[in-house]
Image (cartoon, rainbow, N blue to C red; front, side, top):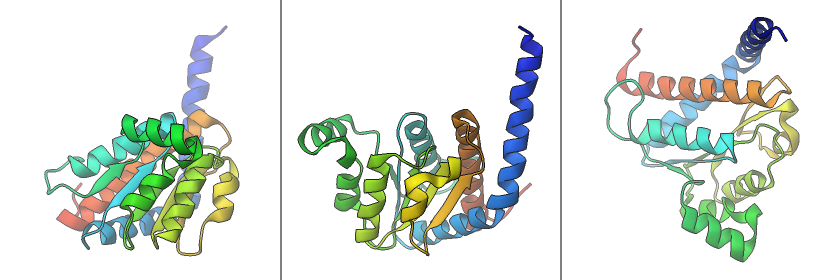
Length: 197
């Protein structure tokens, strides 16, 4: 096995996935930045959810909002719906795993809030249920998916924002998702604090 060639192939594939994503997602990520900025500056909040690596991305994103990204600023309102093990296990036990996020959206979500729903396949049932609950609460949704968007891509409303990474491999989709979330954080901060190099 030629490990050097294997490593190089990963880097080249990542670069291609990133370039392809920039080409198709430039306009929607700008819209997502403006949507999140409008929410957090109008006494609303951002809820985020996902499973596995996407759960880690949701938690990471909310940590950047509540804590800080690259510059000091006031904390921004956000909740990662996959972090409270008591809620996750109680709801999962009593209502089923598909409801672990939607129950929280129904409890916490208000009009003006934003749901950031992350699913690499676009087919996570509990993320789909969260989106349905968000729509019922008159929230807008930013969906991060890959592989063509799956079922989530089909259920989004006209005023939702779909950031679908044009790649089929899970690791590449996840790599671009974290880039998109960092771009989202940087864009929010630029609108709040002014742009910087």
